[in-house]
Length: 492
Image (cartoon, rainbow, N blue to C red):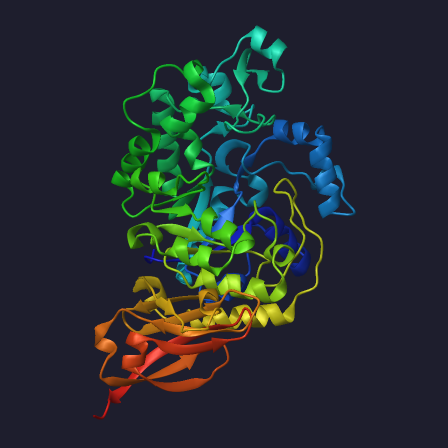
């Protein structure tokens, strides 16, 4: 996998349902038309995250259909909803085997072979915190679970359940009520950690990386806050520093990606994760101004390089329903142009608005926003160069002049490697003017051509200006993505 990959997330069940309808035949992972993989690769992605391939829980389906709030969310997403549309949560795992209805292990193997042909890596899911109540471990390995008592069940039936002939805790995090469709694994248990390692080794034989659901929940710090003494004695070592090296020893280069919140990205990076969700950037893009975005990007490069940038995924609302149209484009440039991993969710490029609960096997038809699709194709085309995957990223300087109050709306950064690039975004609702500077002294003494992916325009500018302060002016939410090419030595 490249250092800074572009990853495309597919809700596997929904995607295959749509392919089946389009092709007029049942389509699973084993017989996806080649042109589908080719189209994703042609957009410039480096990997596909097939979200939700593992066997889902019949018990989880029954629990979901008894939850009135969940069923109401299903009806909001699908006006013609029926109970048959519910296939269960992909994070209520019955077994870490590819669901037979999606093509089973042979279907996944065929898909991976096809992805290899197009230079695409494959990322799958791992859920460290909990399993379905009908997962084989519940019966065979009670030592893997957090237990309760009959008194616990009587006092708090929303947090405990009888499964496998005993009372066990439902899965949870420390801030919200328990999840009724899953049971809690004991992250302190040495036996559970060994089982997690073996499970991950099996997964690693089938793909190139895993996205670890709610990865911070099994850290010693958070697990202690959630469960206290109920889980037993605090281990000397943390969960991830035990698990990740053991898996990567057998599968070098296998990628670990953390879904991470609560400001724990840096801690999880130190515990071994290659990349962690950048929820802070997402929240600042939604709620704050350019200065807050710039402040976040000013953190150390080692931290920035191991973040996952996004403006939507299956947990967040659709970007087209969250941002005004022009702001959505500016936010996309800010996220996709950064260092680290860049994540795009299926439907984001077309401007889908309906957020589909992950329990469902299908989604409603929505019109394609052709203007937005053209914007993304232009942006991704501008980001196709190798420098955006293997190069060195740097935050650019910004400045203004007396009487100029608009320059703080600018966010700017550069890339250097096999080629060079400069990106500038006006993340604000007014026209912005200012100067941006790249910290590369070897820009000086030459004239540079600036080819803009935003509109195809070309300019010639002094390298001294690029180093000391290039004048830019952008319309509200406007952007430049300049490819920088030296033209020769300057005179004088």
